[in-house]
Each structure stands twice: as C-alpha cells, then as structure tokens.
Image (cartoon, rainbow, N blue to C red):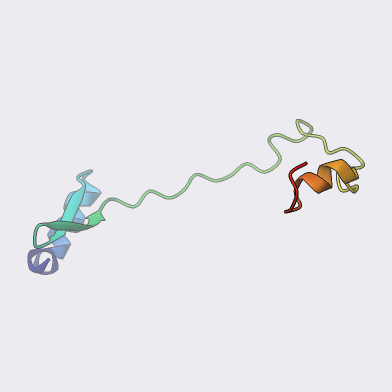
Length: 75
C-alpha cells in the first residue's frame, strides 16, 4: 500500500498502457488500478415492437392461484 501511494502516478501510467495493477495490504489484494473505459452509449428503443404487454396484465389473478401464495394449509 505504501509503495502504491508513493508510485501512484507511475502506476496510473502503467494502467493507461493496458496493465492491471493489484494493490495489496500486506499480502491481501484490496484494489485494482485499471484504465478507465467509458460505458458504451445505449441505443434507446432498439427492441421497440418486440415485446407486447397484454391489456389485462394487471388484472387480479384467479382465487386458486392467489391461494397458492398464501401461507397455511397446502391443500
């Protein structure tokens, strides 16, 4: 850990060059230093029309189905 603090700029340069640096506290790995990679932009609506929702998707379930979720006598 002490070495990572004193060599931080060097370690960041190495990460920028593609290396993955593992920082240890004693002999235990506690952190990784890697190059920053921005997340890819999301394309909104690319699956438009692929999924449909039934008109009654929020209708109450039949009593026998609801009863299966209630605690008590299993049948």
